[in-house]
Image (cartoon, rainbow, N blue to C red; front, side):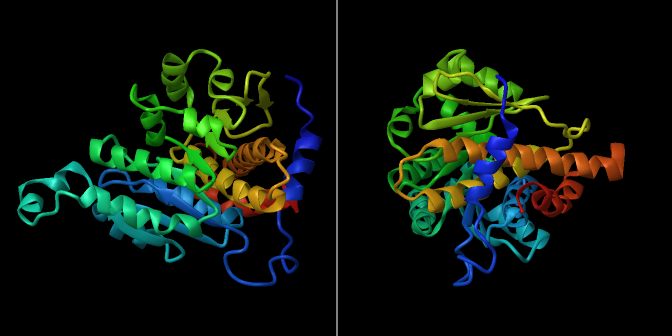
Length: 312
């Protein structure tokens, strides 16, 4: 599909709140993003999603993670608010049962959901892993967020939940909220096996799919894809998808506030486009400086300059 990049950038720029204007009030007006993910093995992914949201311009980033990952993630940055609420199967062994803690997963859901009304967007999945207890908790939290109209970005292992035969996407598809899926090529193939080749058509008008690849393709409903083919980095360093998720979450936060109850759905596509375009621009700038040595930490440092060039 031929893309009018100028029109999409213009739409995205209208979502960006003015510093010193409508943000002259209090901390949190520019977005409070939550990231649900991380586990003992994977601590970098939720960090990159959360720090990317801050670098993009969100005021606050919360990370909801396991006890084994929380302390590690706290050491990465003092900017992040880290909640060690989640449990994995190994936490629910004999000792937990002896203490009467069989309802620990239920308690985790309740503690996360206490924060949902305070969040402007929730990212689910970075570094979550495949532990069945963690995945079950993620599914329940996503349903609660949907019921509360909290915009969702579903990435990485959050998509594993959507691939489950028991998962029903219809409540998400039928509710007029913002849901953005961000699968890579492998995850796209799994989703297509579950829902059909035409993901946009299968999931409906209320769910945006960013198919990540050499060219990112944004699909909504059964229409043609919006192709984001601007230059990025030829080096695919780990964490780039997490950065994309965090940037999209920030734009969704702004979009929901800017649009309010107007009912114009184009802000969802504009938010997805803005996040993809920003991530590509930042990765290009990082590669120009570091070449093959580029890491995701280098990409994060380029988000601010890339944002200014595109949206300010």
